[in-house]
Image (cartoon, rainbow, N blue to C red; front, side, top):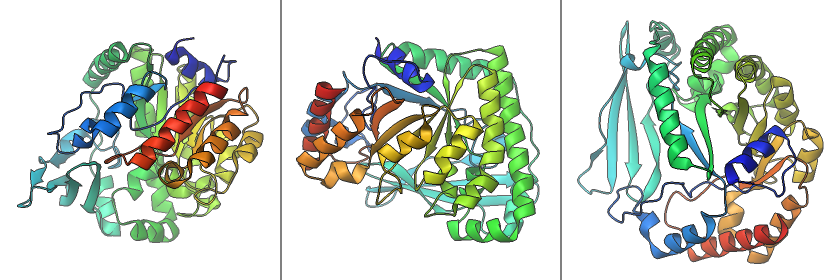
Length: 380
């Protein structure tokens, strides 16, 4: 069975000849360039050799952005988001990007930074820093151009052609709650989630409506075979928030998005870090097909055996290696954990980890990746 078909079958809960294997940090497109500002570490010998061993075996995933309309700024139209280029500081090892949200009552500036040799971004100034500024963003008029549908479809086709049978293309959605939390300092988000519940539900209902209208129209015109990737529900799991917040701020809204995906023949994947013991059963009710990374203690609060029992073959579990294990654990522990996860083949399981490398790969990390790969090849 081809890797793409293997992954889709596992997501649907169909029988598969082996457990699929997916890990982040090993893209299907690999063009090593040691001069790359953020990705130069991928050209180093340790990573090159590791990629050569892992890439032909794992299922690759590509996430297709719909960011022209679906974004973590309450899904306001793209013309109201003005971003500059990343500009290097005097040291050359840090770059800064400034941007602003354009609202009827004035601009809301924000700032991001990235670092040489690290493939992530930090937001060092958020656009929203008060209740009134949150309301300002809500006041931005919502419009949508259906011309984007053909742009997205071409993007999807190009990604699928480039991917081939190596893996699957997912299109990026979001849990509506993260469109609020991502715009402000998290402590302000926590405060407002308690003091401004009515406003939060008003915003969540509107953001959900926007997402549903957009993706329903897209999938009606272009009935692709894909997976909707909902990220951000982890804002509402311990230790960030209580399990009750998942019921209040995630379930009622993500379920509407999942219903549209299911109606249009798509699979619904929820990316959700944290302690998900409570959230797993709710995901089944929401209509989610699969979830990752199902972290075990101490990062999470559930063993894989317990997660499999809760999922009850109604939800595909993608996990549950914690990335810190791969970086720090003895090789023997890696083998033991991999065998534990693979012992649940036939239970809607995909072997994976909670993250992948975003900077230089150490010899220890490379050794543990190879141990994981060898164990997978032997027992999957």
